[in-house]
Image 1: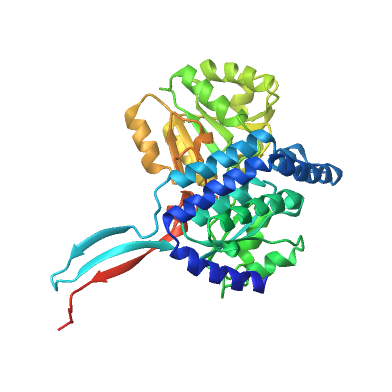
Image 2 (image 1 turned 120 degrees about the vertical axis):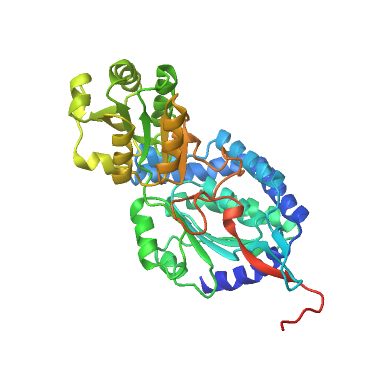
Length: 412
């Protein structure tokens, strides 16, 4: 791990001054290598899937692990999208003359070396590498043991793309050991690593937050909400609430709790419940919800704070916007929350008062994603309030320094 750190620091210095065209060429090369080696990637991923089944991984984790052909194509498309984005490095903003005659502004610069610790999803290896490269950083990636074959196959494509672009091969290093001690060592490498970004289950992220000597960009839970206001368009509400829960279950931006204004509930919930049940979603509701929907299990206090990552949904009826906001204040994980309403004033109030990294009006929470936000891809979602918040793309992987332009100026 120390060797990885030393190499990363050397590579970060070179990446920080790399030309945009070289970084873009590397991204395009990596996309091409992934497509050309698709059969190899699928074969290596099959080894991980078979091992995962033998070890008892559940369907949600197996879905995250699955590197099917369509996902490889999506990864390659994401790399090309990142190559088309503007390079944030070197951007100067706010340059202005001061009374002394000097000009003061800010320049955007890379963070340096980024340590990434994640589970299951092999696509994170490519996404993280791409974002770190384009933003002029070096990175050390430590994926989960369940995706070791997949991650190493992707890493080979990354090394190939870097080499053909003339960039340092150690700009992206994927930890090759499955030893959990490697994670602990990475968290103590403050001499080499500037920021740690975890992606995975709550227990992993809690461990990292507790043990890391290095600043962490993270979110612990994705307890996301949709609130259907009594001034909502019913067809919109049903489409949004159904998509937010069922489009994909094992993701952090899936809705886990549905809030519905009491006045509109009889028109919305029975229709929604029929669709949810057809999709195999288990419903857990407050007392009023259970009275309205037959077969709905009573929700416990714990349900309002649970990220299911599964076909389970908690439902609560609220008197209106005020009670919905109170519920979010107590139970939201500050990830993503959405309101469905045709009332402009209520929508504006929801946007202003909900303290989450993404707040939406008349849209599914599933849009809380770096690609959907035009970032090309994301290295993670941050619910931090300092430095980066929401999907972390290129700008979130940079910082700013002050620059001063003078012409022989001295301070009197």
